[in-house]
Amino acid sequence: MPCEERHLDGDQLLKVLNALGNPHRIRIVAALAEGRNYVSALARQIGMGRPLLHMHLQRLEAAGLVVGSLELSEDGKAMRFYELAPFRYELTPETVSRAAPTLTEGEKGDGSGRPGEGKGAEQPAGNRDRDKHRTAKPGRTGRTQEERAS
Image 1 (tube, rainbow, N blue to C red):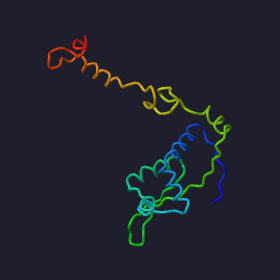
Image 2 (image 1 turned 120 degrees about the vertical axis):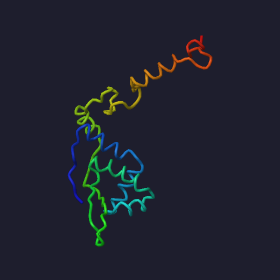
Image 3 (image 1 turned 180 degrees about the vertical axis):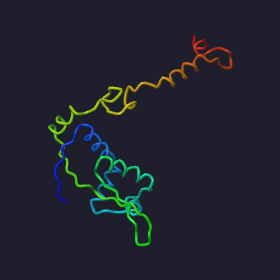
């Protein structure tokens, strides 16, 4: 099926790359390249449980790579079908350069675009306070950890 190349902003590019950055999702895309399929048959085809398959399909759908539709079979049973959305991306230095200025910065500023993840993610204040409380709590000997360490 013919399709136009899409120009993505930074966040959309990350979403597509993240969606395709998983071997299970690559296998799902490859299976759907053979044609549309319903969830149960697709799960059997790629050897994956339906709950895990649903999670991967949701990621692919959010990235605009697959499209799902609910249909009724002849016996009235609801079946969820998925098919590939027409897409074509060219990943070049120019593509990345064009997308980079449009990235939204994550809350941590580590460049991941996701709050609270990645290297250097600060521990939540609640955990710091809890851990501080633990170190000051007397042990069986009646001395705190700090006192035992000295």
